[in-house]
Image (cartoon, rainbow, N blue to C red; front, side, top):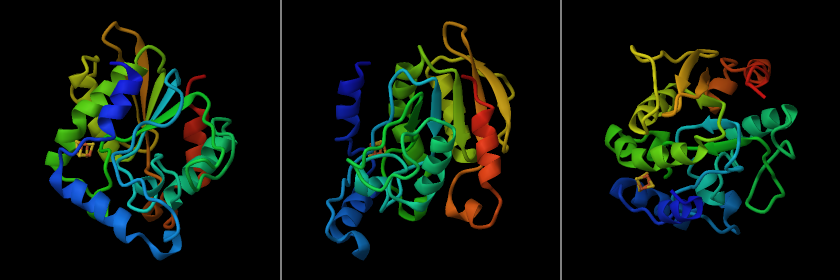
Length: 227
Ligand code: SF4
């Protein structure tokens, strides 16, 4: 697929009624702290260079994060953690990202979400995940020529990635590789080029506030990626 056309098609998708209602309601009512800011309120496209060697897979946009800024992980606590770590690892030009146009540039990494619209309580349904899967598969096809590692943040992102890789014709071991922090699985593009699937606990506040995911753990995973 043509990347620009794909991004344009994704950003006008209205296939999930519950998510369309939620993303637009949040964008209208806003959070008080962001009352003076425009909200994106639409599906969020991938962020970062198309020839990135590392693909980071999250879950879905946050209501007042990416649903506000239009950029994955930008403007929320999860993003604070992720971009600080990406900056330490040399992938991000700055350690923080709070809004579109804040100067952030990514090098060697692209961030995509298997569900493109913010879900209520950060929980997309199985049906919504399945409905959004073709967009994810199309994104994988675009990244396929360059990607060397796919870093999945959380088990839902891992499972969605395994399913989408199979849907996009990649070679994935059976039985299905199991998620864990630091889990690794050898997958291959449809042409047989090896790519590493890497698991990492999600950078959600639930994990970072409780110490389940520490900065060192995140740094270690990023340092272990090829490149
Ligand atoms: Fe479309 Fe995906 Fe958003 Fe559903 S979640 S409306 S499939 S972009």
